Image 1 (tube, rainbow, N blue to C red):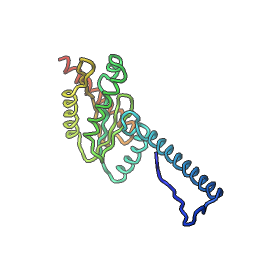
Image 2: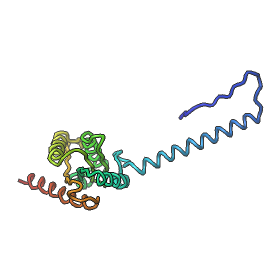
Image 3: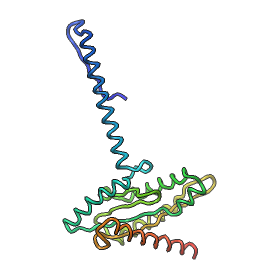
Image 4: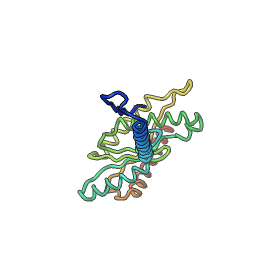
Length: 208
């Protein structure tokens, strides 16, 4: 890939000798090293911040960023919602259809979550089948309406696996900072309980 050119010109013919050529080769080599180091730094920074499959922030970056969000919210007496998402039956999908189909499921749900997350909010892939998000200027009722609508949309848009349509879904739990806690582990635990309650209710409704 071409990043740039250095041109050395002279009005006189045969103005450059071997020393000049050697000097330019030295400059060129050092510029190549600088560019290679910068590209390597960018790649490492990307790996440190982003999940490779989904392109979302990863767990490590979310933890770091949450501390800044928390400190700002405490300082200015602000509130926000935190949502824990869990893909329904991802293990069954992986076991029955293979991890490539599981990855398709993850990417499809990622796409729907991203489309319904504002730029001012933050969403990250927290684990294999878990996502976590921080939402500002909203409330539990509005978020419930939004993500129930997303689940319904996913059910209407199954992924095709051979001759079979595979409907996707996720469960979620919503908590509010600072009412439900001020530390991430507190909020996560409460959101986890609410998410599993949501998952259990959906399972019971299916059986009913």
